[in-house]
Length: 451
Image (cartoon, rainbow, N blue to C red):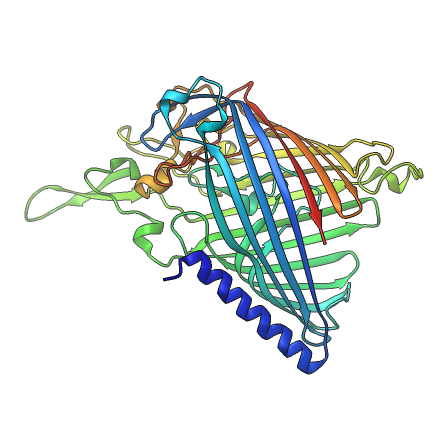
């Protein structure tokens, strides 16, 4: 019997072979590409929380992740393009064992996970030609990476990499995008304007398979500035309403934010209560901006990314949920607690580096950015800092550097971001920021080769 990873590999191999044969018959071109990389790093100081709520401080926890990708780009005709990308990763992390907390992590305490995934598998049809820079309509369908803020290196991209109820974020080293399974329609009729309409299914966070719809616009002001913004109607179509908005039960009062009397039962004489519950569904919005002073300060020693200033702010959930009963917690009654913002600057390096980006983020949420209750009880409520005996930091920061030499790339990052640590117990994932307190940080490096 083949395991699921093997089935994915075989399926993609068959699809790729069929695509190549079609291209061979029709005459269009097919091009293979690939890359391999070794990522390594260390959580110098962080926090670990296991699935049962136990935890402590992480010190010198090593992380290794060799990866390999192979891709195929096939032009079926002038308007239709097929894109495939298969990725494999071996993740070496620390073992989940409370006896290891507050200690240095030795090599024999590391474990490994192997993941094989389809990183991209989409068909794209472009009116006007696949390589056109301006086009009235482009439609793509399948699994595809999506990024709406081109300057962001680590923090930001809140529309799709952040949840509203509860508030938590997603950061992956050198992967500041969101992978979608759905349909995308793009129009770019002018050099200065483009608009994306998206419909996609939730693949990574519970409840799975809910449908979201989003719209994102982009405006360019010459070579000096770029503005953008969008709205995400997250989980607007629920596959199972009892999962998206979990009902109140006697042993899960925390799911309800109010219970008001709306009358009296004429038979029993007992009050009729209207119980209102939190939901995973939300309306998120974000705006972004970037400016490039090089439009007025040309100098041959400035690199293409030097001097750029950029930022993004978001509201994660436009709806507040105030409670009318002191017996219930008002987790989401303040909009400012769900309004993160970030700002970044690319320092000039006289073309020594491709980019040297420094980013800062602020979010006033008093809760631990965590999906612990989401996965362990299916509940859209946050984890309080008091539950984990933590003192939350409202700030996050990141320093990212990259240098490309031919087919080789060298990357390094030092950050206190929203990295979620891995362990070897799939039923007790951390599911929370590994660096939520002031003074927490980690570093990571990557060496990559592409062909």
